[in-house]
Amino acid sequence: MINSHILSQPFELIEPHTIEEAMKWMANYGGKAKFMAGGTDLLVRMKMGKVFPEVIINLTKIPALRYLIIEHGLRIGVLTTFRQIEKNELIQKQYTALYEAARAVTSTQIKIMGTLGGNLCHGSPAADSAPPLIAFGAVVKAFKGDQERNIPLENFFTGPRQTVLKQEDLMAEIQVPEPKARTGSAFVKLGRVSADLAKVSVAVVIEREQDVCKDCKIVMGSVAAIPYRAKVAEAILKGKKFTEGLVEKACLQASEEIKPITDLRSTAGYRKEVSKILVRDTIGLAWKRAG
Ligand SMILES: Cc1cc2nc3c(=O)[nH]c(=O)nc-3n(C[C@H](O)[C@H](O)[C@H](O)COP(=O)(O)OP(=O)(O)OC[C@H]3O[C@@H](n4cnc5c(N)ncnc54)[C@H](O)[C@@H]3O)c2cc1C
Image 1: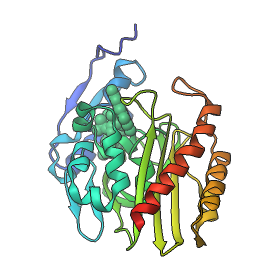
Image 2: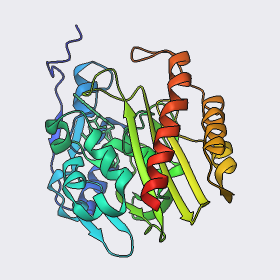
Image 3: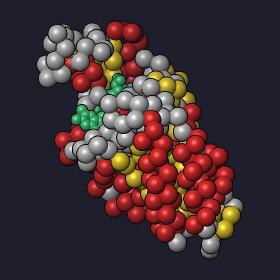
């Protein structure tokens, strides 16, 4: 019987200390094994009887995956936790939308255990780190055996709980370019209660030149099968004088573009309606910060 409090299935636990060792174990066990970081998604899915790995390869003993370097952009080792992001003053200042996403994660326990790599690899359309990272133009570095590839995060998600990574691929790093001068960002999340996954979330990054919106990215969570970039709405603002009327147009367009579903957190109709307000508020915040 399914009981989300009990981990009843047997599994072998392997704890490598290097990336090479982790990849070797994964190659040995193939489809029977799964990587684990904080375990806050994986263990819940095991307890609920949704996945049955015979082997868990715990990544948390690999120091080469745990770092946060801020130097002409961000280099985030995948084991970096939401708590580390939230506590970093430079991220708070320069990558405000990412800081706000980490702050919006439900509880201190999850912030301490949950990693950015796990959040992205789980592939949820509600993943809080995805909209700001996509809006900032993040690229992820992944390994398949000894081959390395760089994937723009915008092309990473392929469906609910699906990404371009295969079972044996390891995500190692998230790279985020340095924002240009006069850039502001914001992340706003609406849940049923404050400690909940998003009904809808919005991240906006705006580059401003006096009263003109030079560039703009609008990325939304929980409104489609994957984190969704509202490109038509962005085009309404890009290169134009920033006015209330234009923002209103962009919000309506964003709400038109998205394809939300009805699930236990919200209805598709509510998600569409509330998106108009959330997108407007998030654009307003990012614009103000860019100034
Ligand atoms: C009570 C509760 C509240 C939550 N609240 C939020 C919330 O507010 N916002 C939010 O976004 N999420 C939330 N989550 C979901 C979860 O905590 C996050 O997605 C978290 O970031 C997952 O990270 P992790 O390190 O625990 O991942 P894990 O559970 O260890 O892994 C998740 C998946 O990614 C794979 N994986 C992990 N690391 C790698 C890697 N380096 N390379 C390849 N594959 C990898 C694993 O095999 C697994 O399939 C919540 C979960 C719980 C249980």
